[in-house]
Length: 172
Image (tube, rainbow, N blue to C red; front, side, top):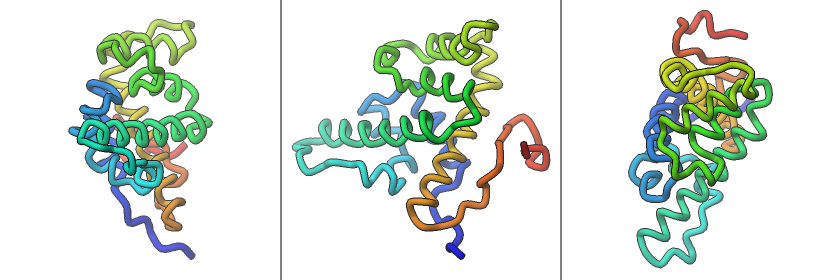
């Protein structure tokens, strides 16, 4: 049996994701607000600092490594959470063309993408309901990925997190 997971908690990862999305995955912002995300082994393994000659290049390397990990988590590991996968592509943003958009605009476009345009989900609704749930699910996915990388066992493997429900109701 694998040892229990010893990395950052899903709550700490979710808090760091919340801070990072404010200005997106820009190097200066990732460096300042990445916190526990930058300490994930998944990020450290993708980090290429050998050619970083200064702080700006180091910040860019961290942003690139974190973006790679988040892209893998969102695009490959969030299978049954399609609407939140589409939302996160806009919130983080994983689409480079959205990097210059404000968070409010990314919430609006993410709300449209989340429902594939079939229903209007306002930016305020995304902010208060869908964003916290999407980030909590992403945090759980990152914990599972990190635990697997460490050869450890995550305790939240089948959990679907809903910040608006008590933990006892978070099972699928």
